[in-house]
Image (cartoon, rainbow, N blue to C red; front, top):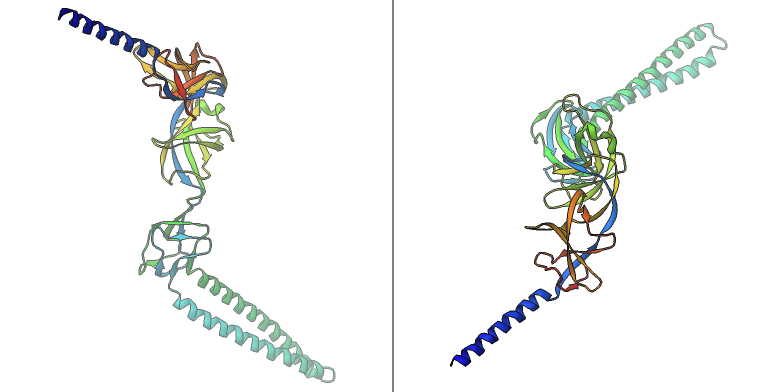
Length: 348
């Protein structure tokens, strides 16, 4: 009996030793790797920014009257589409009156031009006719002026009539309806707010001490809690606010994943660019002994390397330690990886 128990105990010890040996060697772990690279980056600080449209307008009434139609919020429009209409009854009636005045002025001018031709032939032999000819010519000139005035008044009324329709000056969406049909508007009163959702930019403000490190065309990291993109600096406003001691940065957002009004963070450089060895942030493994990365050697075995982090840029961060440019570092599957464990590199 005792011999059987000893044999069982011995087998158990052998199994434990074998398991320990296997564990120390490590089963091949599926991992994804990236390459440590020399990159030119600069230390940065995060500042708040807001997504705005470069075409964001409140469209106002240009004539007085009662609103008969206003586009609903969310309506998509293109340049030239009618967004709102103002009652035009009085202007149409005025237009009819002015058309009649133009016709009357034309008739008066035709009559005087005919009289001028008739008296011109009589004036050659009749002194009285010559005097009347001068009067006719004077009346003709006055009639021409009256016709020009009537035509001008008609054109002005036609312009007002056209302005009873508020049309989209650019492609966009109706974001806000400031007045509703039935309300009476005065000249210059806002009716709707129109926003172009395709032509976006970011407005951010940073401390003046970083002004020298931001230049037009520079790519800055922009992120929210879910989305991160690179945006190009369109312009830097070289005027600091005397109260906040900040300057303004505007960044282009062509094809942006963000909506108008989205608040986000912008990484603003704090110093000049410098070359550093960088790895993806996902390569860092935080354990009780500090910050580490796993480097995959030529035999596809993981080697734990202790590193010190430095400045970051986007998804990459500077590291110093026993790591060199070109080293393969594990960025996926490193959470339970053990030093010396074999790895199976997956296609990233």
